[in-house]
Length: 117
Image (cartoon, rainbow, N blue to C red; front, side, top):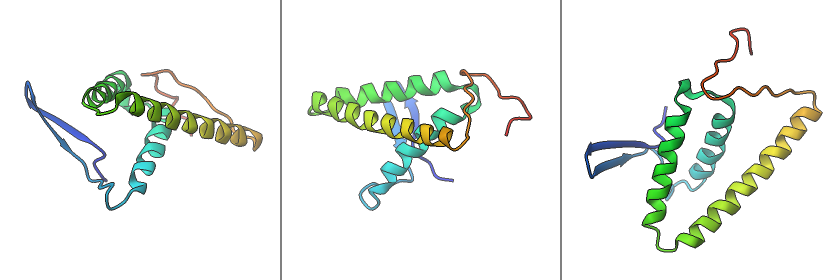
């Protein structure tokens, strides 16, 4: 098991961040996290804490953008890269369905039936 990102708050303004990933030595680690996290966000229910997790991811993103030297360029890059990932995901879903696969969508906090595989 690896820690993607651990954020600890020790005081009102004392945040500390930990990760097991080093993108300087392994640039593909970022791509692996992006694809793995997006797949998990689509396919698992995270134990029922989806809303809290998404809120914290967005809060960290806003904090990051607020200290970014070129905020508009960063937003443009995030928009383009996420659009590329959506396109790839849609193509993969279409291919899966063409090969006889089916998708079942569960809303946040909804547990799938115990018999689901």
